[in-house]
Length: 142
Ligand code: RB5
Image (tube, rainbow, N blue to C red; front, side, top):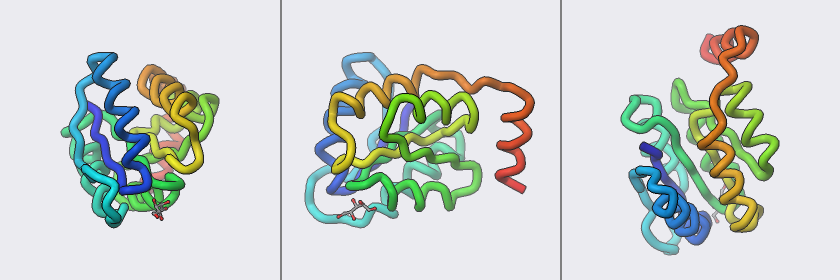
């Protein structure tokens, strides 16, 4: 189950992500926001981060205008490793090296075509499980 969250700035791109997930038959839970009416990104970042941290959802996708505010907020929650990605190399590397559990994107930064490729790579790339990466991830929580 993929947890989804966005603010008004991320709403248009999130509709594209939802369409992609539906096409791929990937289950998701949408924590809002549900329109382009102005709202506060921390509200939605926290809903998604808690769903992932508590194991209700295996991964999350967060979108705001830049991806910055929503990723800063998500990373305050223990156990969350939210990666702001604007390219496919970073999306692959953050899964392999950081076992990132939330993908953050900026709807005003990254175009729809690239964003959907980033989503695909993020969701399909497994963690490497290499000992050096396991050690470093544990160090994040120390
Ligand atoms: C909203 O205007 C904008 O500030 C927000 O979407 C995000 O970019 C914050 O980091």
